[in-house]
Length: 423
Image 1 (cartoon, rainbow, N blue to C red):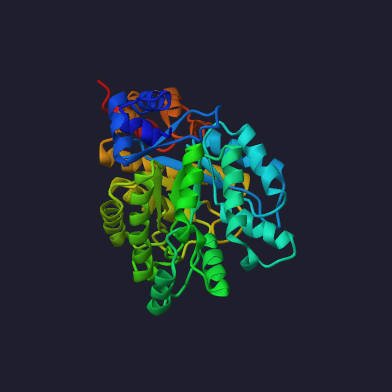
Image 2 (image 1 turned 45 degrees about the horizontal axis):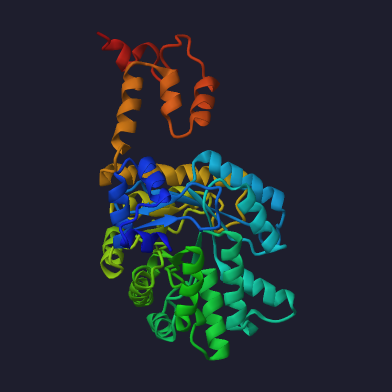
């Protein structure tokens, strides 16, 4: 029985109780939003060591960190270091996007060490294994794709990105639209090229019931991927993106009817003035399913600073209803993220998520800011550091410029407004 099926039977599972306590909501409220499909409990039934993660309406906006090898850099030790950095920085989940080395071994090592839920994109591994066998990835069979999905689920993967919304119809719309960037999603590009070469419909769309059967068996949350997401501002909110979103909404209905938990992935690169409309579209078309967004990045001209462009968009998206933010690091578009990039990306995304939570009125969000404000007014530096989103960095900056009067800082010194208005 999945969490969704339990909720429909009026059962408040242990995972729902734990998540409700963490979210500061009543257990019955948690059960109700899971039943409605506007929230999911992210926890593979075989992944025993992690706490359940609740994502959805009325809950704290969550943050995911992507890690994983590439074909140029495939040191599992480095990826485990990135995992630790992500967890220490406060990520709620991680995704292993490995495309180099022994992917099964890497995933299992990450699963063994991770104290938080793990997601994957199975098509990456399926394509890699085809190439290792001396074949092009377009020679993959549907059976090989589903075999990888089942293998990852059996290992304990908690959520999976599957690009089931790509069809010949949506690809034709992208072609007619005349995008600058075309298809920028790796999973989307792999799927589209497989379809063109084989002149067959996407197996993750055509054989969707087969996918549901695996997800239901392990209670894996299906994250319906935006394989046609915009890769630059000029391509945002076009017909291809929206056509895919309509399909994802229809597939979300199929998931819920089958007792499978589902969330929807979204853009991408997008001008600020389109973000709120996109959140509203997703919630309407997908009947409130949790929305998992990458960014959105609000400008294309800031390589090296895309954790900032992403955080700007993420804050707006979260305030307008996005439930789950995928971080973007400073190295986005430039290289595989290093450990420090992971840390910076998580903190930036957490700031965005928290800003959105304040706007949405999430329980306890504003209280955190008020507590720090009181400590700041009282010139209680230790409490300010303790309450900050990154205490280590706060302390480093404070200690790097010690004031002559320890009650103030070197910005204002004796002209400190709080000192002047004491009493």
